[in-house]
Image (cartoon, rainbow, N blue to C red; front, side, top):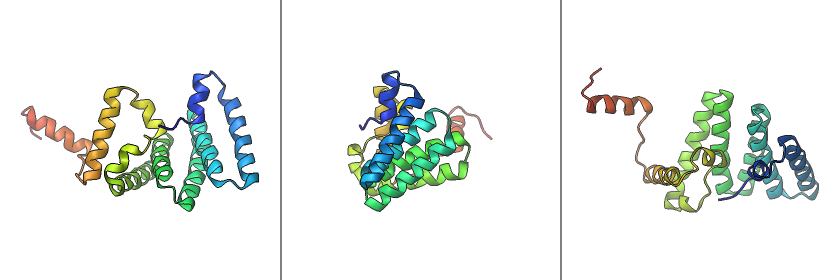
Length: 170
C-alpha cells in the first residue's frame, strides 16, 4: 500500500501546516518541471492533508485536480483511489450526491478490474477506518463481491433482513 505524505507527517509529529507548506512547494517544483505524475501525487497528498484539517473545499479541489491528471495520464489505479478519497471527503463535507457519484464510479472501476483489485492499494482514508487484519479481510471480500457483479444490499435491506430473521415484521 502506498503511504501518503500526510500519514508520514502524522507519524513523525510534523504539524499539518508544515506538511501543507512542504507539499505546496513540492507541487510548485513538479509544475515547474512539467512532471504531471509528481504534480498529481502532490495534489493528492495536499487533498489528504487539507481533509485532515477539515478544510474540505480545499481538499476536494486538490483531489479533483489530481483525478483529472490521473485520467489524462491513463492511471486507472490512481483514478480509482482518488474516487474513493473524493467520496470520503465529499461525505465529510456533506455533499451526498457527489458521494454517491464518486463511490459509484469507483465501484464500476472495481468491476472492470475484476480480481486484479488485490494489487490496487486501498484508499488512503478508508485504510484509517479499517486498520486491523479483520478490517482488511472485510475490505478484500467486499471488493470480491463487487468485482463478481453481485449486488450489495442497502442499509434498509439489511435492516429488513435482520428484522425478518428475528421475526419482526413491518
